[in-house]
Image 1 (cartoon, rainbow, N blue to C red):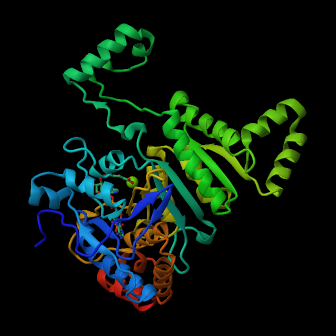
Image 2: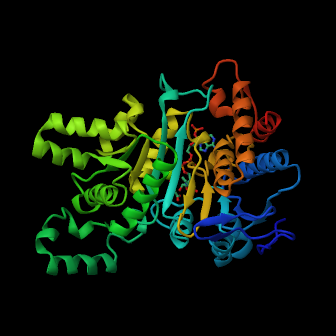
Image 3: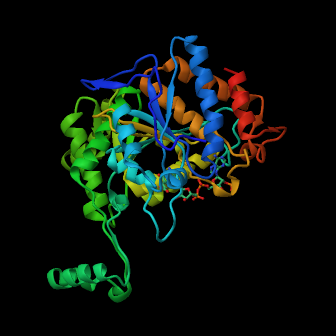
Length: 432
Ligand SMILES: NC(=O)C1=CN([C@@H]2O[C@H](COP(=O)(O)OP(=O)(O)OC[C@H]3O[C@@H](n4cnc5c(N)ncnc54)[C@H](OP(=O)(O)O)[C@@H]3O)[C@@H](O)[C@H]2O)C=CC1
Ligand SMILES: O=C(O)CCC(=O)C(=O)O
Ligand SMILES: [Mg+2]
């Protein structure tokens, strides 16, 4: 039985940050949340992979001091609260952590604890790399062409939780205000008497810090393009503004490293299309990153029909949520879709899978732990423990190559050996 209070493990030390650089001791304390639903099965499997990778990479010189913190169902049953303050404080204090999925009820009840953690810790980047592992079954012909990195804004947009329920006194107050102050806007609401209303804040600060991180990532990783994905034709002052902030930021702060479609448009207007094309070609030939944009609905088609057009993607919260599950399908599904929630300025980071709690599989030791395993791989790389991260990739490659896989892959693979969640972890470890 877990201790009802989070306790710092003996002999562990804190990860710290100075001048934007992490200092990681040899025995860092890493808080973790096991998660709801399939979370416990997945965590038990994943932590064995993490410890094995660290042991193999550093021969006992380094080790993770895991510190369990509570959230979701486990916190509620142990501590009678869904998200204890001390859980948030632990992630704040120890800087880097990892979590399993947490359940969010639909249409009422508590608001998302996952979103709350991101907001409370101001983890403004949801980083979700999407790439194919050789041998993973895919519904597309060329999954090897998919190599995209999603930078999803993680603190604003409709996820801000500013929502007013239909029929409530609050929504009436809000709609009365809109009616009095903005009568023409009010007239656009088709059924005001029975509407719930949500607010979609999108700021220049929020957009710019996300897009800045995405451009810096593209530069640091030799990426060719960054696409700003938005629905700015319809939501002009939120999604459209996001796109405009992106182009302006690239030209203002990264003029030497980027070329934007906005620049292309201006040159075309002034000198014609041939001149604009020549300018773009010269910029890209010199190694500049192309900053372009695309409207969110067509992106969902084009990532399938021309995946090589997409490289780094910067987008807002809701688009990023949809896009990350859709893209995961192309490279084997949500069982192999890792992620990290990061504030690159403070260093705070909480790594977690893209998938949710998959409740129908809870406690069956059946699901794929790959997403959390690879989220740990991202965490190790973020900490600078690249040797451990590389071993995790090697282990995943090895297990998949010998077709020892969980049900989600096995159902799509010829000649696969279907194993349990825990057995997959054992296979990964054996191939490190
Ligand atoms: N960050 C977080 O903590 C997140 C939490 N959630 C929450 O999770 C709950 C359930 O959400 P839901 O929309 O059903 O989405 P889930 O991602 O939990 O599950 C949907 C389906 O995805 C597949 N799947 C999920 N995880 C795995 C895995 N590890 N291995 C293999 N396949 C997997 C299963 O597909 P199949 O049936 O085909 O086998 C499953 O039925 C909700 O409360 C939601 O709010 C959702 C997303 C993120
Ligand atoms: O918080 C939740 O329950 C869902 C979040 C989600 O789907 C995501 O972040 O991808
Ligand atoms: Mg999601």
